[in-house]
Amino acid sequence: MYKRLLLLIFLLLNIYGCDQNKTNISFEKVILHTEMCLGTCPIYHLEINNDKQIKLFVEEFYIEQSFEKDLSRMGYFTGKLSEKEFLYLINLLEDIDFNENKTIENHCCDGSLKTISIY
Image 1 (tube, rainbow, N blue to C red):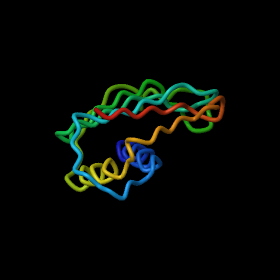
Image 2 (cartoon, rainbow, N blue to C red; image 1 turned 90 degrees about the vertical axis):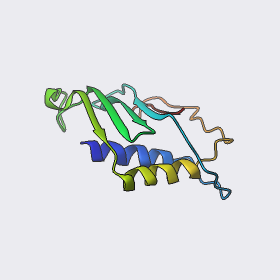
Image 3 (cartoon, one colour; image 1 turned 30 degrees about the horizontal axis):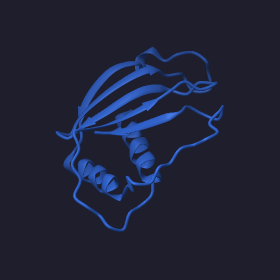
Image 4 (cartoon, rainbow, N blue to C red; image 1 turned 60 degrees about the horizontal axis):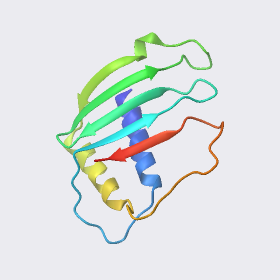
């Protein structure tokens, strides 16, 4: 489950675009939140600290093709990124153009809203 969530955050970070002028980046933490949708989208809050620690709170998770909640996948989880995964995250963060504002103006009903914060 952690690998899927990490892959999701890496893919979402990659969507923000690339800047050819890479700089060294440092951060305290990266946080990803998902919000409710009109269906069975999972709701979770993922935090990755600069010491490679992962904190995950899964608020809602549903059994596939069902409106029934999967209680075994809900709750608080912790872990740690490997050096390779952490370097991959750093490279993705360096590729983000922080000067570019990207906002989805019309976000209604297709899926959950995802928010990424970098401190």
